[in-house]
Length: 427
Image (cartoon, rainbow, N blue to C red; front, top):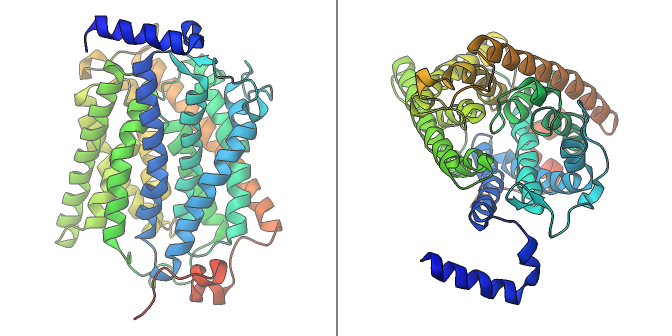
């Protein structure tokens, strides 16, 4: 379309809708973030839901799907009511204010950069949905549904919203110069840490480890993984909040990191067990995506390759340590994959963002050493706060009906015991 035609169409648009004359919105940026918002929600529903559903026993598939659907609904409402305000309102160092409860300050004319603020709030909402949804993988097959709702709701307001403010809302970590493009600290470090705490507090499944059944449907897991992979382009590419070179490079390095990590995981399994698994290569993909997330907007292709190699290897090792050596039943390896991957990427960005690795460079006045220090301090504070707060929230949730189902309900399966439905019916 020529510039002349675009100008004519814009003029006609202003005649039809005069309010657009003073709305300084970039239509290209807006279109891309609209798409990215849909992609990130798609990561949770149905992507992550199917990924996790395939990994559990068939008698628990409905419960896993229900957890994701209910969390998506509850987190969306809480985000509008108070989460967005706590994360992005005010200029406090540690927490936003309550000046934008119910998003009451957002009008059709409100802007956030070159996009409507309503769209920015919706995009951030999808992050607030998927972060507590990631934690589901730590407590599947043994938790009460009521505990899921209580824990996730409180966790969003007490952990996720404050950390988001620290990093992206103008809080003290932002002032320090922390680099977290799309959520290595905000999303993956918090979710991974909370998952590890939840696994310890709630306890192991009754048949862990020897009696745990293998994933009942690698097919569902692979389908969910593919949805996550595609959705992650919105997760990382959308975090540029514009349709330009930054979004394009973020998308490219995201993809190559996922591909490399998948191959690393596959090769390790192949060498160790004599054959590669579909679940393994899909898990490697998620490890690569989690690892590249904090760095995706600051690095070039060499950095993406390196993060894929590092994520695939170190997350695999972490799975073995958590599950087999520490005997912790983080059922679907949330900490080992998301926590370790997000933390690893958050640290390595201090090196990979430099010109040596075709990165975009560090912030003015920052050296590799000073940036690494900021990254390490930010990760450390986030992990400590998340661990303490998650523990307290779990204890609070336990007061209202308990955390775990009974032994009989666990044997029967949560589908029937908690929801009165079956995912599968015998012929």
